[in-house]
Image (tube, helix red, strand yellow):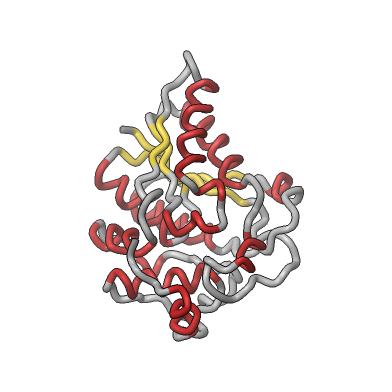
Length: 235
């Protein structure tokens, strides 16, 4: 299938891009600038597109992002440290972000005569992100079937939606994903902080997958103390 991948530049979406390039016909990477404080992730999406030899488009939705207030990813709020499963991580939710991005992505895919849009939502996101859950994915596909009825038939591919992040690391390694050329940290510093939820989850995922983590962290051992309380195991 001719597939367009929604790619932030993070470990999950870059791994997905490499998987799709191996298994389908990758026609391009689509990224979004919604005013996120870790905008440097978009540089890594561009690197992935260049490495894979496909077009990369960044869609500017910063005017929309300014209205999606209350998130530490877009407002002047501190990004909390700790495990993703903690209630404090809810402050990183950007309301309706995936629904907005996917609606745009489906429009782009239909215009380009693509067969599918691929998104890297995964099981670990189910804790706090409602638009990463299987129910949302199924409902969104149904909605798009109606929205594009008679015009286009675009499938939503979400191969990671039921698996933990460690499985993404395993899959990424299988397809030769350059993990060092991906960005996860929500704080957007010079190096991954090692303390925010997405850094902790990233570090934990490599550990569980048994894959060497090439990431440079400001605090490379913080993850051990916060994951011990949650008994980090495969599900």
